[in-house]
Length: 141
Length: 143
View 1 (cartoon, rainbow over the protein chains, first blue to last red):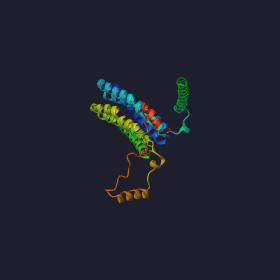
View 2 (view 1 turned 180 degrees about the vertical axis):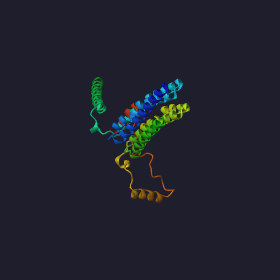
View 3 (view 1 turned 60 degrees about the vertical axis):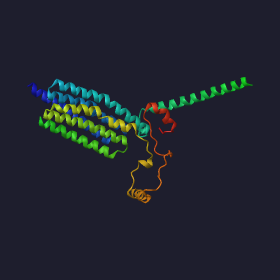
View 4 (view 1 turned 135 degrees about the horizontal axis):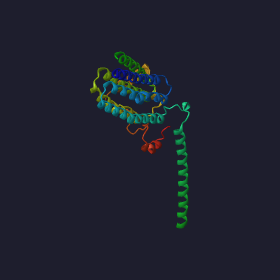
């Protein structure tokens, strides 16, 4: 009885994980730009992996294996955001992001603001240097 | 139970075909990396289904290794991605390729080097590292 229940549970989890991978495949094939494709691509990397590992652990019925599979999920959770961050950042900086498709674009606003502040800083420093130069000139005379 | 494994593997196969289609189509390098990432996830899934079907717990270390090293390729490519101009990005037509190859043939081995090491008009490497931001800005990099 319990065997059957566990088998069914494992089967449902495995098929659920596989379906999430399928959804990711559909997403990266049909979505229009890099960022929305990245959104679709994370599905099998996190939830899909969790479901598959849970299904496998139930199917193998071993605590040791379950712990190792937990480790797999942990590693994927650590490394997934790294590659996603690097990918989106590199995509943004090489101009692969379509700005018209974005609803919120805080990075561009931030960069523009930083540029403005930089310009203000530069002007301020120039002004100070000029003032010091004229002061030094006064004492020299 | 066998039916479940077959169905799961079939779904994963369909997913991998779609990821492969994205890798082939691009259009940019990053879309291809994304396809490879999904492919890694699908491979991890397929291995776990096979391990469940055959009850082999010796396949579990393979899953650990794939989860650890699966991201290195995409990080490496993203780190060294260069901004390419529209002209370089384009795929050459057959005539253009023939012309370039013919020029190379005509060059001869003893001819002086074509590339000047001091010439800086080559592709600009765009830094994606926060520490290099100042350098990148000096190079007049386009955002």
